[in-house]
Structures are given as structure tokens and as C-alpha cells.
Image (cartoon, rainbow, N blue to C red; front, side):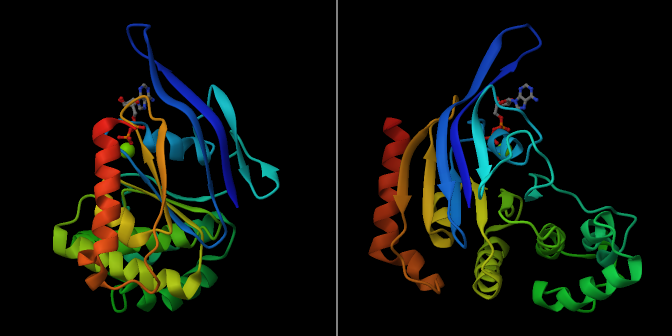
Length: 251
Ligand code: ADP
Ligand code: MG
């Protein structure tokens, strides 16, 4: 579904020096998979998603979606950038339907479709509320629904639960898996939380500190549907150990 081959990226800094951010990144996400990208802060995770979304051009390497080379092409994926914000002056319903309006749907049709999906995203009864009236978890679900409505696979999520407290975060993880069981969309998710990556994913790519390189690809053998209890199982703890150890030794 998604293939990335030999991506290199350097940023030119203000003092004219070069900052190597990504080095030789090769990875893939198969149809219907949830794959996580884990790595320390500043290792280039957001840069890589920007590259896949066509917003940043790599110095080397290519991005493929299906049979099509999409390097530098926009509009091919559903992307929820880090710190994605809802517009405070739009209602929840009008926030989530934005991609449908951008795709040319009439406001009435878009609202109809948006309303239909609000309950699934735990937002029933909040169509006419404004973002400031909602909890952090609800705002995040609204942002996810907006991303979902872009209707293009893969879905790229950059630290979607990063700013939530631990309990809300755990709730959101379970909820995301429930949605995914129903929809089976293809998801590439960035997180710096190793346990979150294991709980959600079929596979994990572990990136080194900057410049980001793939240190390890780990297959998560936990069966689906996943349950919270699995977070304390040997398998998960063993994978966590492998990932943290690889990060410590940088490979
Ligand atoms: P991560 O998401 O893994 O925390 P980022 O991809 O956001 O990492 O950033 C990687 C590095 O590149 C950081 O050191 C950041 O400061 C730098 N960086 C990101 N965007 C730019 C840019 N547009 N120009 C220059 N440097 C950038
Ligand atoms: Mg980031």
C-alpha cells in the first residue's frame, strides 16, 4: 500500500550549516495494517510524515502509494499533523466536515455525512458545540474524524494522543482499535510511547536519534482484538524490552 525507499533529508539551518534529519529510511505499510513509527524526540518522525504527505521534498529516495510514485505529491493521504487544531469559531460538525467541503460536497450533504459519523466517534449530541466546550479527548476524536473524512489511505497520525493524560490516552487507544476493527483503514502512526506502539500496531519501526535511521522492525505477535489486559502480558513486556534496549544501544 505505502512504500518508502531510501529517504534522506537534511535541513539547511539559519547559520547555513546542514542538519541531517533522516538517513536511508526504507519501510512499508500493507493494506489494512496499523504500523507505528517510534523514535526519540527530534529524530525526524514528523519530517517523515510530511515527506509521505508530499509537503516536504526529500533530498533522496521515493514514496509510493500502491503503484503510483507520489514523492512530492500532495492530496494522496489522510494526514493529521502533530498539534492539529480545530477552528475555534466553527462548531464540531462544521470542523469535521471541512475535508468534504474541500472535496466539493455541498454543505448540506457534508453535514449529513458528518452527523452520521459523530456517534461512532463518541461525539453524539455535540454537533453544535464549539471546540472550547469539549474535553481534550473529545477534541482529539473530532480531529480524528476530520482526518478520517479525507477518505484516503493511508491515514497518517502524528502523536495523536500526545497531549492527553494517561487515562484518557488509554481510553483513546482502545477506542481507536474499535474503530479500526470496523473500518480496516491503513494507518501509519507516530508515537514516542513504546507501549502505545505495541498495543496498537501490527508492526513497529524503531528510529534512531537524529539523524533518524531504521534501527529495527518488530512484528507484534499479540492477537486481535487487543484487550487492555495484554498490556501486562509477557509478550508485550518482552517486545518493550527489545525496543528499549535497541534504543539504548542505538542498534
Ligand atoms: P520529531 O517529529 O521526531 O520530533 P521533527 O521531524 O519534527 O522530529 O524534527 C527533526 C529535526 O529537524 C529537529 O531537530 C527539528 O528542529 C528540525 N526541523 C524540523 N523542521 C525543520 C525545518 N523546516 N527547517 C529546519 N529544521 C527543521
Ligand atoms: Mg514530531
